[in-house]
Length: 362
Image: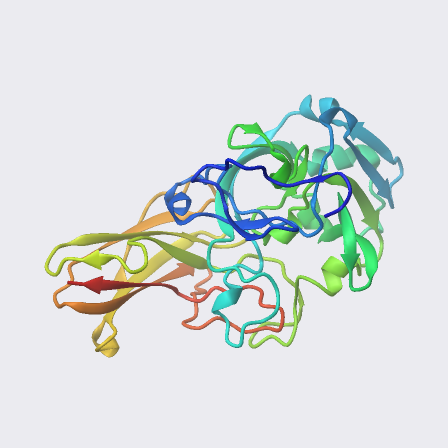
C-alpha cells in the first residue's frame, strides 16, 4: 500500500462489502444490498489499485491544465459553492463477472457483484472546464487521481481519458456526495468523477487533475489495462460503454422451494449510455430436462432515472421437484440482449452473460 493510504478498519457491519483482496483493498457488494433500488454506500463494491489516499478536504485542489487558454485550480469550498446536479447511476467494474469466463482470464476474481446503483451529487465538469477555455484542437480530457503505484515495472498515477464530448456532457459530474452524504475515502473522497453509462474505470476517484490533450492519451490504464484484447465478437480497444446486463436477487442460490407454491423471481437490469432496458425475459429450466423450459416476459418497474437500474419481477410455480436453473436475460432499447455465454477476451472485461441462479424444488 502506498504511503498515506488507509484501509477499512475492524467492526464493519453486515452490510459491508465482501473482501476480495486486502492489499490493496477490493471488495464486492453483498447479495442483500443488490436488491435495494439504491445500494447503501457502506455496501457498495470497492475497486482500488494502489491503496486509498488520504486527502484532507481543506487541502484538496483540482488542477485544470494542458491545452487550455486559462489553466487554473480550485478548492473544495469553491466547488461546493457551484450549482450541482443529482443522478442515480449504475456503477459497475469492467471486470465484473470475470470468474464466469472459461478459461478464466487473469485479474480480480469478481463474481457478479462488483456493481451497484448509487445516488450521486456533484458539479457538471463542463461548468468548471468552461473557465479554462479548452483549445479547439483538444480531443480528450485526461483525468488523474491522487493514487499511484507500480504497474508494468514503472510508477504511474491512475489516469484515464474521455473523448471531449463525453467529458463535457452535462451528466459527467465532479461528484462530492453519494446517497446524500459526503463521499467516503474508499469511494473517492473528497471528489471523484462520475461518467454515467460507462464502466467505472472512467469514474476516476480521488480526482486531482484534468488536462486537455490534442492527441489520444496512451497511458497504462488506457492502452494496456482496461482494454479488450483478443476479443471474441468485440473490437479490441479501451472498455467504454456498459453492456446490457441483469442480476437475479431473489431467490438466492441453493434456496429450497416448495413444489406447487408460487414464488416471485426478482432482480435488477441495466444498460449503458442512458439506454433504457426494454424487456427482461425469465426462464426456469429443470436441470433434468432443460430444453422443456420457455422464456417468459418479466414485469418491469419504472427506473428512477436514465442511468439507474430497473427492477423486474416474474411469477413462477414449480410443478415438479428437482434441481432448477433460473435465468434472466435483459434487452436494451437498441435490441441488444445478454448472450447465453460470456464473450471471452484476454483481460476478462465486459462479461454480460445471462443471469443464472440454481435452486432446488422439494
